[in-house]
Length: 119
Image 1 (cartoon, rainbow, N blue to C red):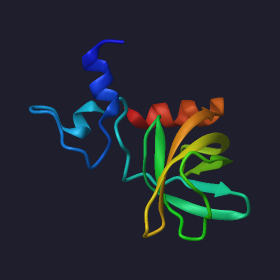
Image 2 (cartoon, rainbow, N blue to C red):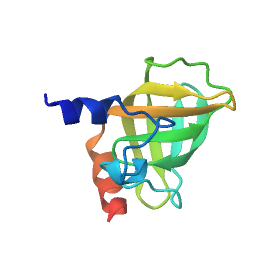
Image 3 (tube, one colour):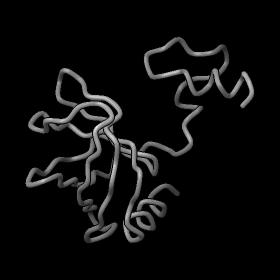
Image 4 (cartoon, helix red, strand yellow):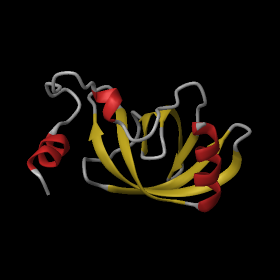
């Protein structure tokens, strides 16, 4: 792996950005904020703050998880699909109860519906 790729991977949100390139410009998938997904983890239901094909941000103050913890659950979207499943890794947890989850696996139905919403 080249030095440039190593530097790009080491940059995290909140870190100084390289000149001429914002964090949003480096994202692989567009963040969707106007279409909320319902996420079910265990018996708890949450709404996404935003999501993309790579992951999601949820307001989940009742969810007791830590960074690098695996989570599994269900995804429901308004008019996009009835139901689907996902596996993810917790990327970060904020003091206000927001949780960032990176998708590891997403059911075929969910992936297809989410891909269509990206266009």
